[in-house]
Length: 166
Image (cartoon, rainbow, N blue to C red; front, side, top):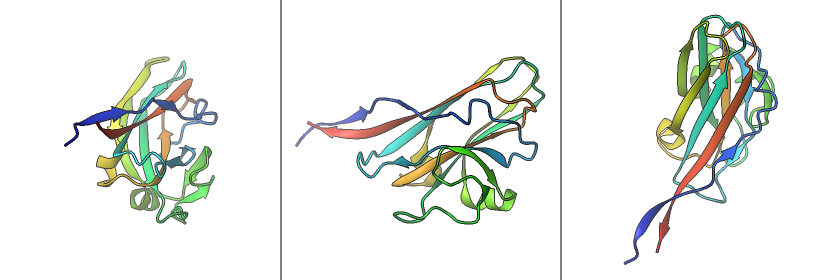
């Protein structure tokens, strides 16, 4: 019988063109969505999402929230959740309301922020599989914040975890 070992894929920084300067959303409904994260080729047992968000020079106390959402089948994103933006396409997006956010998205991480100028907030590596109870074949990440100012910078990273049998 072969030896099974954990295999970590190289980290991939997601395209965050529209996240790095994301405006604040008082109701935490307007935000940014990643492009589709497709696990149908690698078939990783898990993906972990980590991130770093740097606040602007004069933020107010608020929150940063990171969610994941998955395709309903092989090609269909949940409908009715976004009033602006396109699910699974990198860019700004707006969730219709809290009911749709809670029904469609799974919270990966949330943190409170204070008025510390240019503070970095680091999201530790967080399991997508654990959040959903299984590893979705295709999913995306949604980020929102209520710090009044736009973010100064942002980085979101995905790392696949699989197994190797030798």
